[in-house]
Amino acid sequence: MKVLVIGGGAREHALCRSLSQDPAVTELHCAPGNAGIARVAALHPVDQSDGAAVTALARELGADLVVVGPEAPLVAGVADPLRAAGIPVFGPSAEAAQLEGSKAFAKDVMAGAGVPTARSYVCTTEQEAAEALDAFGAPYVVKDDGLAAGKGVVVTEDRAVALEHAKGCDRVVIEEYLDGPEVSLFAITDGTTVLPLVPAQDFKRALDGDQGPNTGGMGAYTPLPWAPEGLVEEVLATVLQPTVDELRRRGTPFSGLLYAGLALTSRGTRVIEFNARFGDPETQVVLARLRTPLAGVLLAAANGTLAGLEPLRWDEDAAVTVVLASEGYPANPRTGDPIEGLDEAEADGTAFVLHAGTTSGAAGEVLTAGGRVLSVTATGADLAEARAKAYAGLAKISFKGAQHRTDIAAKAAQ
Ligand code: AMP
Image 1 (cartoon, protein in one colour):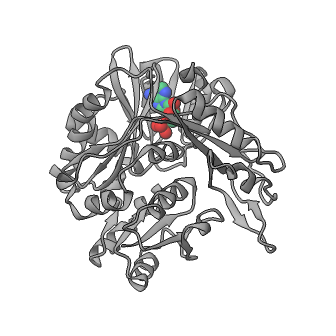
Image 2 (spheres, protein in one colour; image 1 turned 45 degrees about the horizontal axis):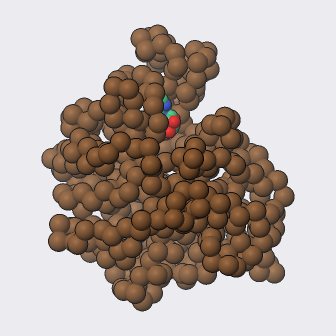
Image 3 (spheres, rainbow, N blue to C red; image 1 turned 180 degrees about the vertical axis):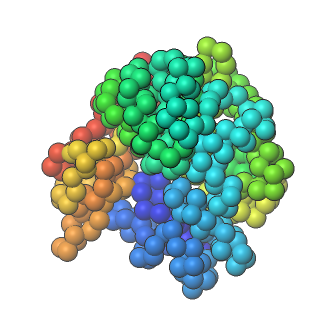
């Protein structure tokens, strides 16, 4: 099978790593990729959101499957011309990707499907926003309706800050605050059948102890020893299947990866948000535990044949990933610094490095090229062992101003 992966972050590196280990995959390509992905896939400098260019590349390569990683190309509709050309594609249509592209659309689908989520108002004027803030009270939750790369959500006790964020957006969703721990649950779907993966938890804040600004994610782990028994079955029955059924009923079937961000509140499980693609950094740890070869699963989703697939097989091991970010992330990441110790971090085989914002310099050196630069992932008999191995690998890598959290999976490992 010839596979083309679209994207160039750590999520795509994780996907490419798993695909490269699948004996069914004979050729692996990635566009645009990054310096780490270049070790396992042939890179192509194509604009990932240009549907015509991506389709032309897939045709030229004779791709049997195209996997679209990030949300921006999905919301831009890159999967549509691929499907129209008869090329199997893992990732939803532009219409179905609105589940992530518009928070208001997602709320509407959830209302139609009876999926439990925070009560909310969609507001387009300052007056409406002010009234909604007062209706719910503090803490205030204000979400930009559109895609904002993890920066569109403000959760604050300060009404003025909340209102200021609302004023900066064309359309906002203001909703009730959800307490309780968060869980990320991914599911692979062909639009009808839904296959949940193992739950994971990520760490959104930049600093230890969940302090500092929201980021794209600073680390993740799986399994969740503290999660209630039957959580996956409950979320499949009350969230994932009804949402997939509702989108099919509306004539916009969703195929690809449905990501439910959940809060386990005192009043039950609630959806915080949906994403229309694998999450980063949870993908790093979830795929580290998946034993079923990946390409066949993604192809079955693309072809609408998931119902015939054998149940997924998982490692009993735990997995932990820690993100190394550049100085100034998330506000003003510094780039262009040489990264040392990449080979040393992987030398004894206990941890592996997945690149996010990296590029190759003129002399073949690897340079930082983004906010989240890379992540170091390890598996172990339990979370404590996986955590120790991931941090030992991370300690060997350095670049100017590198920052990371020291408490990823710490509580859960105790
Ligand atoms: P989102 O982009 O919707 O996932 O929001 C980013 C982060 O903001 C989430 O992971 C939560 O930590 C927080 N958040 C979003 N919505 C709520 C809510 N209704 N109550 C509490 N925290 C929230």
